[in-house]
Length: 406
Image (cartoon, rainbow, N blue to C red; front, side, top):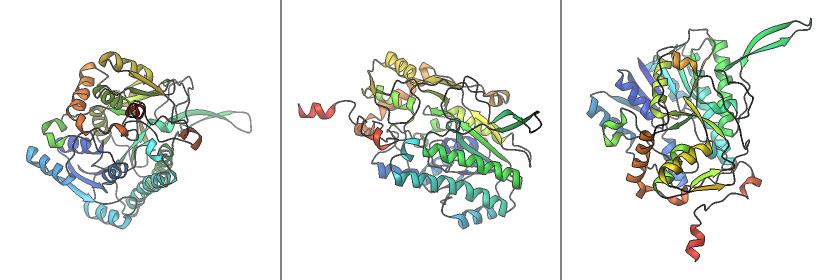
């Protein structure tokens, strides 16, 4: 297939592009490189040193003989340019990662909230609008989040996208209907993913677009089979308080002798998936598109759930690291249960990678190798959900400022 990977320079987009290229597909990356500009804004860099997208694709061609094409296009702003590219190239499938992906970044300030909404919602709608205008029957796969469901305890397993409900009619009878599982976003970033859901629902119903929405858990891990082939193919690896995911952050903190930062009680239960499984799931979704006119196909793209404090205790036991219990910058339930149905990918043949000491050690090894690139001042999570919460945030979990005075 000819596949357009929107946001193919990013944390999941890059390994996905390599994985699909390796499988024989013709890959075209469309990206505005905004994630690299955000590094500059935040004054932090990927733990792993990343080359330019042009150099990355050159190395891939040298290693495999396969070309990955790059196009500098901002989906949220360059509608006519996007439409022109789609008209000229008419891809068979589109994988949509082109959204600002961090909940903490989306809550940093009013400017960051505006940017996240404008970027994410406009990018999604511009893409859908162009597909309809061009009558382009490409299968659209979107990387969403488990966070659209929220993290409250309901005592039942979260279904894959749709919830059967009974509605009482005026005559007193009960009729059955399936609805989108009620949204319960926990940040502006999650709000944009909920809005994406509604846009997908409308365009599938109104225009017959073929859409798959992947509600993904928190990604952990460093390498995929393809990124291991050459040092310059390495994926980006975020450790900072805005973009670093919780398990990867714990492992980096352990590697550099930084306290494991647990916010609140650590009773938050989250869904997780290894990065290798993430790219496998995207390939499985590509190979199993919905029929034209069908409703949006929704998968829960996760493989296991863990409580944050249990992860911290596991890493502390493995590494000897201390745990720092800090105020929670987020406005969320202190404790929650999370039961998730994920039979669809398992039925399609996914054999999931689960938390294993070997894979965790691999991340620690990567962290130790590039520890010289860590800015310890960027490790704490300090983006607060409200102004009241901001006043309680601990900006110095190591107490380095006190040590420097003494």
